[in-house]
Length: 170
Image (cartoon, rainbow, N blue to C red; front, top):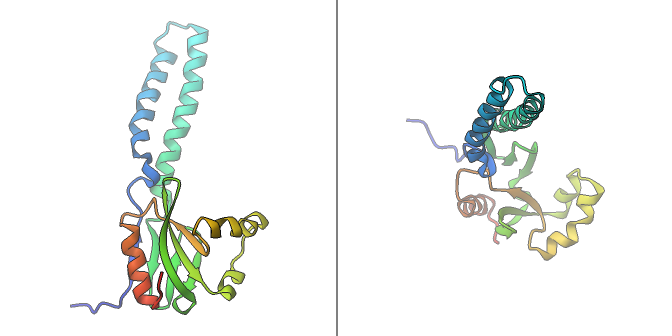
């Protein structure tokens, strides 16, 4: 029997951010577009609208498929050295985490890692992102924010595991 090294990989849900329902909708409109192109006895206006719909809904379907198959299946990993966020190529060592909590901004639950100032200084970010730090502080999201909408696990459970591993409170 393999020994548990304490590592956790948190997978993304099947279709991130609840877009799973778009795939069948796009398919219905793609089929309708094909009927408009080939089933209208050469009506130029109907063919033109069918082509535009096919491009639009075909592109949307391609985007949903790309998000499903191209995005990394492992979003967040907790390893012996720290927290790895694969979507943003981010690493935070355990000793830098001072607290962790889940907050809600609009309808999205955000996992907030409260880290040391030296760790925050290491992060690259745009001038806008750095300028928004005060606003984030007012929203209760001061630190490294991880969108949990694509995780296939309750974010409170992730926060509990991180707090336990880091010895953090929050």
